[in-house]
Length: 343
Image 1: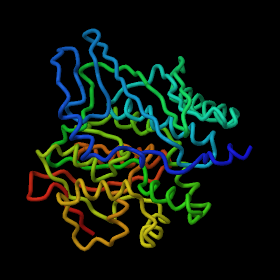
Image 2: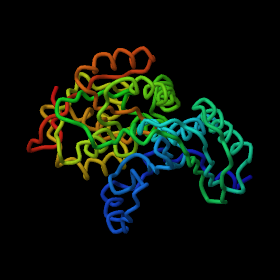
Image 3: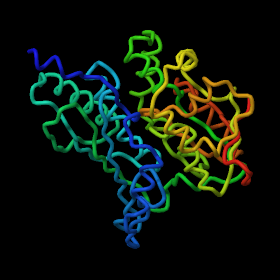
Image 4: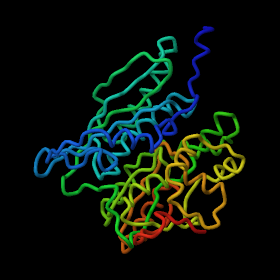
């Protein structure tokens, strides 16, 4: 038992564990880009998932995600990891079909913990309408869990992450700040209420918001994860457009502001600041809000660029889902800065 106690379940996890965007780009740009006409979406565009056309009216959407725990409850961690793994399917406009578990687990740890993680993941995949079809596990020094997910989509109905247009309204379907809150929780500084809000957000499938968006004119969509709102919005703008964000419209967990003001922030958030900060103009924005915008999210919401005539309808419908959301800004013609944040 003495050796078992050295294995800590929750040290640092979720999408905060991602490699930094700058480092990742440096590696990926060296990989060969093979031309394949049926590969409709690959890694060259920094999109959320790969899309491969099978027939004229059927394509598969493939993605995978896994990470260390960011909460102390194994069952909840399993739910969060699964909700995060299927999120890319919804961001592309697809429907979940199958999933495979990816497991790294210490052999000396109680296997009942692994059972709870897998039960949480299985419950979320079932809620997503998918089938858990197997997986792969290895012995490791720490815990990591996620899933490889396959979905389906019509080839003509794919929603890319980088096809927004000037005039589009930016709608965010979940609150920001879960990275800051879970970081505070790891040093026992987060309130029970803040953690409950964070867990509710992270365990909520983006399926429901995606169903709302399918009936509207959406030019681009992505999910907010490890690169934070600003990093993922930068990918959406693709150096073709700029965006203006309005602080008062941005949804966030209130306690995250307090924790950021006390410098309970994440290393991954600082990586995000270093990578995109010079392309963002903050106009009298307080430091805590800057940190919330750079904060890495785990199982974050969808960020949709919606045609202005559908924006109000989209926001009202998403608000009815009961999750804190917001009309956070607009896409504009290219300016000197990619993103301007105003009060």
